[in-house]
Amino acid sequence: MTASLGNGFRGSRVVGLGMAVPDRVVTNAELATTLDTSDEWIIERTGIKERRIGGTTRQLAIDAGRAALETAGMDPLDLDSIILSTTTPDRIIPATAGAVQAGLGARCPAFDVNAACSGFVYATILAHAMLIADAERILVIGADTLSRFVDWNDRTTAVLFGDGAGAIAMEATSAEGNALLGWHMGCDGSLEELLYSDLDGYINMEGKEVFRKAVLVMEESCRRSLEKAGLSIEDVDVVIPHQANARIISTACKRLGIDIEKTVQILPWTGNTSSASIPQALTEAQRQGRLKKGSNVLLVGFGAGMTSAGALIRWEL
Ligand code: COA
Image 1: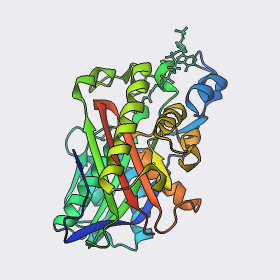
Image 2: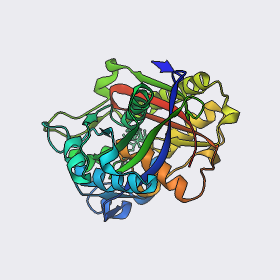
Image 3: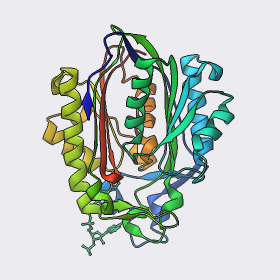
Image 4: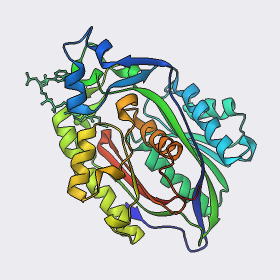
């Protein structure tokens, strides 16, 4: 599914952002005390040096959401919706977004979206569609605690994941002010077995095949988002990719002809935080001064499902 929006009458833009990470740092060296692995292997094959572990999905989401509302100068009571992207809810019933709404002191509709590591971009596109329809202010959060679903005795997955949350506050604009210039969402459900966890199980993954497919779907989502925005690769100023593996990012960038220097990478210290990774990297990019007003920022996610999603945003902060 692909589209470029506004609808001719209204658009949306990002007006605030924030992130949260747990305090507990687990280094590669610490993992190597219990697993047959090494700091060198993990860094060379993934780019990850350490990850943050702990907390609950709701509390991380509340902390990141509050930070985004504060930077936007937005009152929780003025929100029209909270959309929480998570693949690790605190409970099966109800959605974790309700607890986040209560924790933030908001009164608006709140619901979860699960499209694995693409979920935050899915949720951003959904928020955009709601904003051009009628809503005025939406908080979009990505939060995951995948450490609860990792088999810490399995070196092929334990080294990859971390916990955390990131969030953006969005508001409606006129059509001329629209800043979400193009987007793409994809899913190939026939690839479910490549990466899954049963309800009471651990993450199962065919790493090599996930890697191969991830590069392809990432490329497709980038190209199709740009096409819908009417922009070319050269127009992209900053790329915020899902933070799974530095080699996936560099391989996809090579295929796309994107200078790797344009990518933001926080995975050396976060690991793969699933739904949280893109808003966390976006927040970090803003903190480092890498996002300028008017920059074309390309978000691109991929993950279990197998899902993928891209969104080209003109930066307005
Ligand atoms: N430490 C040391 N050795 C490890 C290891 C670890 N943590 N994990 C696997 N190995 C070993 C394997 O057992 C294998 O040994 P063998 O040759 O004796 O059989 C060897 O390293 C190579 O394994 P392979 O799976 O071919 O490595 P790889 O280069 O493909 O890297 C991943 C493995 C998981 C890092 C990589 O495939 C990957 O990142 N895939 C994508 C995963 C992902 O991003 N998932 C989330 C998507 S949202």
